[in-house]
Length: 457
Ligand code: ADP
Image 1 (tube, rainbow, N blue to C red):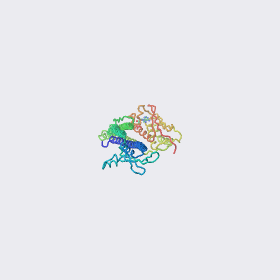
Image 2 (image 1 turned 135 degrees about the horizontal axis):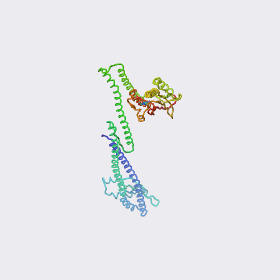
Image 3 (image 1 turned 90 degrees about the vertical axis):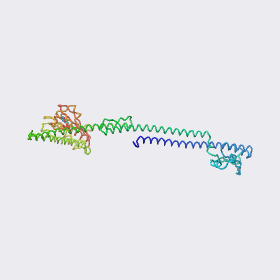
Image 4 (image 1 turned 120 degrees about the vertical axis):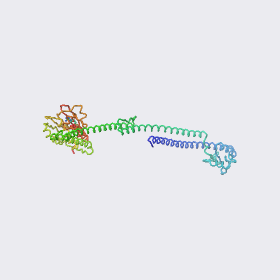
């Protein structure tokens, strides 16, 4: 991989380390130089004081320049400095260099001159009287540095250099190790994502540790799980839909073929059966359309405070004639108006009518359907209870799934496709609510939906 993350990470780490080491090396060098200059300055001044003491002592013992001249040459040659002595009239009476450099000419002399450093000037005072002036000039840095100081400085520089080299090697090793570990874990994630892309949702990204990458791995695994579920659901749904469509279609086809072959007469009864099947087909397509709409409804749902007692009464009353026809009693147990739930009018109407129609379908003559409303905490609940056939406990967890029917043959007779409750659940979730069921076979069923309580507009 060109410009891979690991390469870039290693380069960045090593550059940082080298930069840091160079920076500290420069600082060490500067600090070392500065402190040595200071130290040497002190040494020089101390030496100058000794030279001056010697000169004063010699002059006061002999009060002649002769002894001063000889000792100047000696001291000059041992200290590597040029010592010049002037009398009070400014005449040069002694110069250590004239003796040291006798016969020195041309380039060598120039080199000595180039090596001149700072000149110190002192008054030569004997018993309080100034007898002359002394100039001390050191020739060349090397002259100033004592051998120990030079060795010490070189040792410090060498150790700094070796330490720097070791630090760079360690930085390269650590950086490449870290980079390999980091990219190794990224490769695990990439490999898993590639497998998911090919449809192998069983693959998992097992990233060790408890840092951000491990969390990312876990999140991606959860996403894979949900993708697998979605994929299974889609497969199941496609299978279910084709199965549901095939049944009425096959019936219609076989009737029509029988008409064509003259096996069955196209009389009113037979045509009625064909029509019934085609209605069933149409109903199924409508249900599917409604479910799709419910799933996509979240985008333009308009939630508003709804006076629920009023709303439910109006919706329920609409079904009263149908229930009366079948001999089913309808009871309303609603609190007074003024309880507001947050809902979308059109969606809630479909929820109520779906639940009422189910209660109607699965309750026989003489049964009772009760619609009750109550508040609980921050919620308002509405229950549609019937005294119908009821549902066995093992079916309850699957009741809200698409195409789930407790008894496929019986519900086919009643025209159900197993989509109604899936629509109810989808619509309730779209409105931020939920739906629950409680039932016992032979005793009846109770479907309750809950909405958030709210204030009036
Ligand atoms: P359907 O169109 O088949 O009624 P639903 O999704 O509305 O589809 O219901 C799913 C299944 O739940 C039904 O097939 C039925 O077995 C059961 N069911 C729903 N409501 C009731 C009820 N009130 N009483 C008994 N069973 C019910």
